[in-house]
Image 1 (spheres, one colour):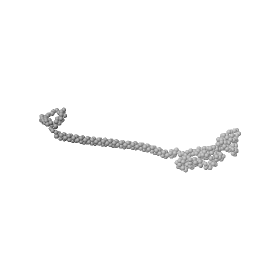
Image 2: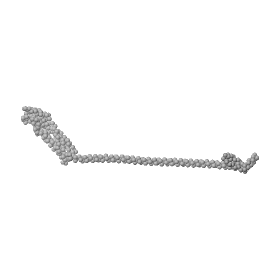
Image 3: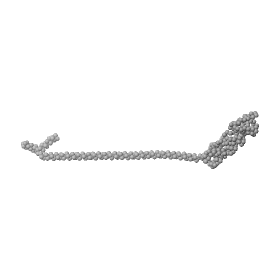
Image 4: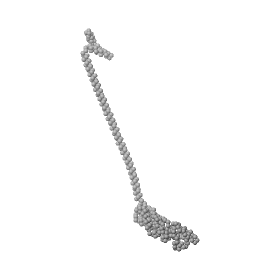
Length: 335
């Protein structure tokens, strides 16, 4: 807004560089440009002030999709006045010369025009698609449609307006529709979570079963090895017993053989001794048979003399002594 200082006869106006001022005196344009400062007489002067800086116009309106679902589009349009003189001729930008305020609300008129045009382009875009397609595509198609529509709009060019940028922040459904649209996804996510939980539980059960089966196999293997050990120990004991029995049998056989050999040897020795004795007895008998009775008697007496200590009683008959003495005497005479 321009700054106006009032004096008794004339007033002074000073505007900012972002304001394009058109100075009319008695209906004729006597000065135009941004950031002007000049003296004027209120009775003969009219001043229009057009902002030439970039202006941002937020918008929020509703539209329906092809399947009759209500959507809310929120965004902003950045625009500027490319031809201030042209816009000042189409829209009233004159100001009060007392305080510098606009007589009308020109920017509201411009904003209303831009908003209506943008809403029309949004409706044309959304009515062609169903709500799922719109939400899936996001804000880019809507933004591009508004930008293209405003950029090619002849009415804006005739007003001297230029669209700098278009931004669409969100395209959202109603709360009930959003909840309904989210429900299948939530259910799918929940199903996936349940499936993942079930899968984890199944894997845990499989792992536990595998561990139990492994432990069972280990126990079976240990039992089998224990059985093999018992069998092997029994085999070893049986083999040891068989070997001991065989050794005992061999020792017994050796003892029997040794006894048999000893018996044979003793028998052979006895036979030899008996044979020798028999031979000696036979020879003795033969010798004694050749000897006379007196010699045999003498020998008997000699044997008897050797056994005197063991003889308790000895009986000698007279006949024996008479005969022996007679024979001894006869032999002595002959000698």
